[in-house]
Length: 265
Image (cartoon, rainbow, N blue to C red; front, side):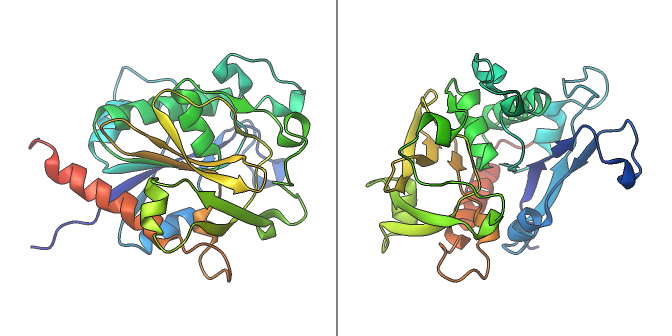
């Protein structure tokens, strides 16, 4: 019998106040952007969105728990989206529009810790990379242009995913081993926040060139957790951008490996 494909959970994006024309008055929407699901599915895995477990995204002690959900899945992908709230790393927002989504932060941090506790791999994309850093005690620059004025442009509302720049892989990093024939690559850039102080047991995997902004991180613990500031799921078919297949295949291989190593349930 063929082995079943990995079951990968995707954290949900949250829309707390949907536009009236969508027809969901006073409701919260939980959703995913199809590119990320298709990217995972195209490499042989099943993509499943993980809903929050109560209205305020805290754990419900009755019925299904975060632990129960994670037991049924083989890995976690943290999607991009709204800013991480400065309150989640002990700071006040410098501007009201940078307040972020603390509700989503609590939901995703709990997911992240439970996947790590169960020895299952995590891949964070854009906001997801920042969330990994914050969950492990790190901090963020709330706005690159304000706090790192020497940096190149990392976001353009008009260009959106058509803005890109070079990154350089750190020597000896996981990414450097996945792309052994490359030391530099072109990636998407859709972020105005960035990693400042690294969280516990994290190392830098790649930096933006030439400004040095952190673009990828990796957890040095016993499991597997990697965060990418760019959107590898947007690279499919894009000429000149980094081939993202080695990244997702490495993540899925870790999911298979850790599933095989887990004790029978």
